[in-house]
Length: 233
Image 1 (tube, rainbow, N blue to C red):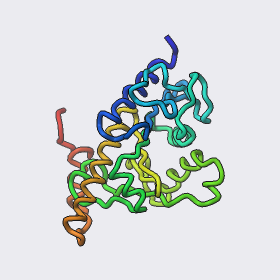
Image 2 (cartoon, rainbow, N blue to C red; image 1 turned 90 degrees about the vertical axis):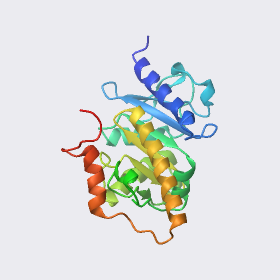
Image 3 (tube, rainbow, N blue to C red; image 1 turned 45 degrees about the vertical axis):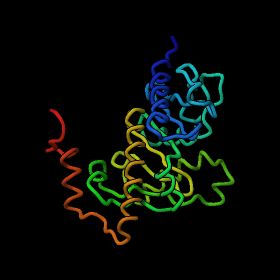
C-alpha cells in the first residue's frame, strides 16, 4: 500500500460525487485532496471520464505542482490547486466545476447577492466573482496565475478564505475549498444551488433587494456562531 493511498481514496470518492450531484458534464471538473504532513495532494487525472476513474489513477502532486507519483497526466488545473494549497494552509480539499448556474454567474462577471436565508445559512457575504485575468497573466502560466487571481480577489474584497470557501472566476467557472475534499464538494453543491436560486429570484423580481443584515446574521449564527443551536449537540 502506498503512503498516498488515503488521499487517493479521498480524492477518488470526492470526484465521484461531482457527477452524482449533477455538478459536472463529461470531464468538466476535478477535486483534489491534500496531506499537509507529506506536502502533497492527490488530484483527478486530466481528461479521464469519471466512469473510468479509480483511486490508483489519482495523481500525486507536490505544492509546487510537480508530479510525485502516477503515470497519468494530472488535471490541467493542477497549478491552480497547488497555488491555493501553498498559500492557504488551512485547506485540504479543492473543487473546480463548470456547474451550470454558478458558471453562468461567473460568465456574467457578477457576485451572487445574498437574497435569502439559504445563502445566509452558509456565509454572510455575497459569493464573490474574481475580475477577469489581465492579458499578461493569460499569456503567462495561465493555470498558475488563476490561483493568484482567486487569492487577489478575496484580498481586494476583504474576505477571508476560511470564512468564504467559494468563488466565481470571471469568464470561467467556480472553485470551492475546505478542510476536507468532501466538504469542498459540499460547498460546490451549495454554490450551485445558491446560484440557481438567485437567478430565479431575479427572474421573479427584477427589483429584488439584498437581504437585510439582521436576518443574514441571525441565520448564519444559528448554525455557526458560538451560540448556534442548529442540529444535534
